[in-house]
Length: 338
Image (cartoon, rainbow, N blue to C red; front, top):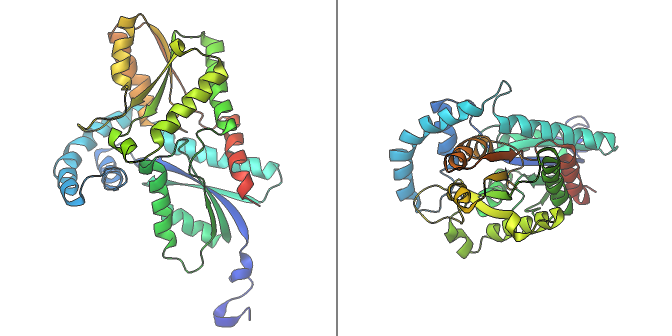
């Protein structure tokens, strides 16, 4: 039977039975060049989960205007954060995957760990196919978006479902859709902030800046805003902060529609006139530092704050590949590995 139609113990179903963890992040251009950024944005902005405008109208805008103008501007920004290791997001996500694999190895658990990007490379499809060839038929998917939203978490699910729809032998699959209130996430985030406070002193105000989203999404039922506010509530309670010592804001808005408020950049401009001239900024929606944290928050918003009269500004890095972040990932997926 094992040799039926060419199947052997070496290449047949007997090889299967492995368990894998798949980390999914948003993505990054291959290079900080206009052409590479154009390819990346063309894939990213064509996702109907990301831009909810009638497809025909949006494709005309995207290819007729945006992809003619924005790639060069974005490439210049990527060049400011690019390192010898390449894209910070790619480098950090790779290290997260490696450290999580080592964590399971040291704990004696036979778990394979891989990662992919929703847009760009390594793609969802290629990574799933590679895991399949390795005999992995049970996959726990951990999208690295702490707070669920349709444009991020649901889009990752869409890509996985699209690939698996072509498979004859489907793996057992568990998809973790949010961890915004997971105790280990809150503990790791609060510990990172507390460490900064211990080293640099407590600022007048802690700004928790989340990635923005059109306000319309909230009214249509997306829980992202509520999940962000819950993360803030749990973190500031852990830190023992009063209402006067922190503020939640939303960054990275795009287009003319109203997005979730208050806006981070507008807040930076207003705080000094309110007597707040010493702040620390953390971005709890980002599991790894990237363009939106390193350029927009650590760079652009610092300039806005200082030009408005602010005196002390510091960005608290994302959890990246911190040991407690890796431990958090392991503890989130462990219940679904058996």
